[in-house]
Amino acid sequence: MKSTRCLLQLQRLRLLGQSGRSCVQFGALLQSASTSQPSVLQNKVLRHFHSSTSCGKNRSVPATFVNEDKKKEDKSLATYDDLFERVAKEIKTKATFNKVIDVFNKKDIRRRGHVEFIYAALKKMPEFGVEGDIAVYNKLLDVFPKEVFVPKNYIQRMFNHYPRQQECGVQVLEQMENYGIMPNIETKVLLIQIFGEKSHPIRKFQRIMYWFPKFKNINPFPVPKQLPEDPVDMARFSLSRIAGDLDAKVTVYQLPCTDVTESGEEITLPHIVGIQSPNQMEMLAKHNPNKPVFVEGPFPLWLRKTCVHYYILRADPTPPEEKKEEPYDPERCLDFPLQLDLDLDRDLSEEETFDVEDLEDGPVFAMCMTSKGDQATLNQWISGIQENNPILGEVPTLFRLDVGSQLLQGVADTESNHSNQSHDETQGQEPQPGEEAEVIVDKQPRRSQGMKQ
Image (cartoon, rainbow, N blue to C red):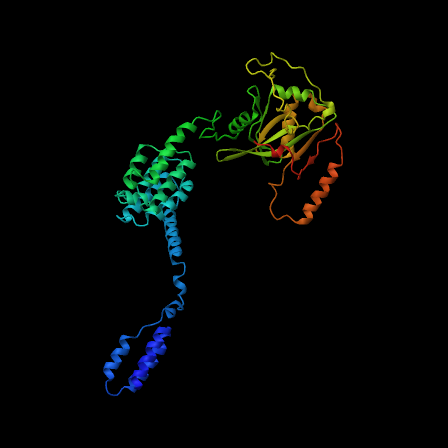
């Protein structure tokens, strides 16, 4: 009777989901209580012994298995980055980049880890200077195993067969698109061999081949791929590009050279290149001599990956009461008339006025580029402009140079407060025509800085 009672208690505990330790204790009691048939009862107890599901859920997971997949991925990417650094220790060129790809291809015939290697190679391409070479992109696509990721039926094609590899192939094409690289026939053949004709990389290839020829020559003022290396030639090209007037004349006021002083010290003189159009000279001749002109800058100009800076000579906007309307000359431009007199019938519901907010800015009289934007260098530029614009000898010239980008970070607050006080003091003084021009640092945003360059 006692053994039967223990069996009933064991079944009740199994239904209630108690822990395995309690079952073992009752099993030991059952074995001690049974004297006639111990082996049979022991086999029955062992046969009906089950552990609870809650026991497995409460077990703690070791810390080594947390984020193990992420650590493996980071480790693989770091390994391939180290591969690029080991192979290209001294110099990073196209030959060394191709050598790294050949080393990976010969390492394993199955190309294990090719996705991580391609992602690492895409990040390293700008360092090796091969981000604009179509042959390198084709060599990188050749790393994929051939005819492995091609779907065999419409079900595989519908469920995005091998999505990780297809995303990697699309990423290669997107980087080509970002750098303006046109794919060729070899690229298409490689994509068909790797992913098949009905895949996401092939669709991306088709979109690029459709849109790139349409936008290839849409820019009427294209920037050459190889920019001039000489700073004087670079300044000529940049000023001619932003002048907006074909009649503007570029003048080189000073070439870069090295001069030796009487004490034997070598001084490097910067280059000074300026540009001015006949219309700007005419506006400067009509400027009021009692109002100052300002030298402002530097303003950035990006040409592909090269950033150059330029300075402008400008004046404040003319007040409305001093404006004079000049008569319109119909023969000034015959191809593009500056005024249209159209007598159109309007309906009563149509409005003749438009809400247009006009923002007037001061005229720009000249521009220049120099490698050293201090007051002494810009004074030489103003002296060179004065030969063709004698009115500058009567007009006071103020310098508003943005020196904030040239200062070191972490300047003390006392120095900044002192500069603010000196700025307020200099703003309160009005320059006289016979006095020397003062450098005024404008820390407030100006309207000319908000213009789109």
